[in-house]
Length: 328
Ligand SMILES: Cc1cc2nc3c(=O)[nH]c(=O)nc-3n(C[C@H](O)[C@H](O)[C@H](O)COP(=O)(O)O)c2cc1C
Image (tube, rainbow, N blue to C red; front, side):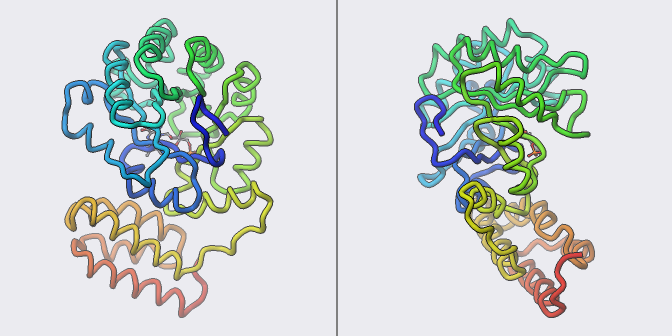
């Protein structure tokens, strides 16, 4: 698949997720074949004012390629300057966030607030397109509310201004993350555009991924929450796209090994204190649905040392193996 002049090894991507898709998480997803990863959204104001926090979101490595950097903002000049900065730093693709429903972001006119202002969308894209040559995408929602679905119009504006692909998460801002993503809208947008359309929303298995591609005709898919505690999902999807036999279900041993690796990588990046803290949410996802998982999580809630946490994880997973009935 191609986005602008960027050739990708497949059409299965990791969705940007604030607080989650850092370098460690992206590295794990890539290890299972994910072709394109995105940073979480980075403030264009933060980038142009050179605040340290914004630059931390851009931390990457030689293996973390190709990398899409997602920026958000409201002012066309500031977004264009930020795009220039991240392109200079080596971003392989720039995505502009036009879908974030968080109040703090909407209040500034950024994220999904742009969907209400098509003229501004045009102004942003004109400035950004003039400022960078790297492939450019936008990530949008359906619209503001059920009676204001305008994703297809926004996508058409994007195509007119030289955007190279549109990523659509077909829920309205009003909807937040409730209900279902309206895949039908992905088909509609796909029919309207000639540039690639990437679908995002409710892919939790290889079956879902195949179904989205089949039902909507979209060019690529993006996995978000389905990858939490489950980086193997990329291998499953890619194998089933290639019509290969499905890999065997992930074993308890593999799961424990992955947790150990994930924790070690996080600590290498952030130090023991912060690393253990950051890993907590992943620990929840890795053990969700496992027998005694809630009890186990409760027992490690205040653990701060890596070795202690790893031995608790080992003891818990060994008990699961003994009983050989890992899933509720
Ligand atoms: C915790 C969380 C953080 C997210 N952060 C971002 C973000 O920074 N930028 C963005 O465009 N979308 C963000 N999203 C939306 C996802 O990229 C994706 O479009 C959405 O979750 C639907 O896909 P899914 O059902 O596969 O999760 C976030 C979603 C979640 C759950």
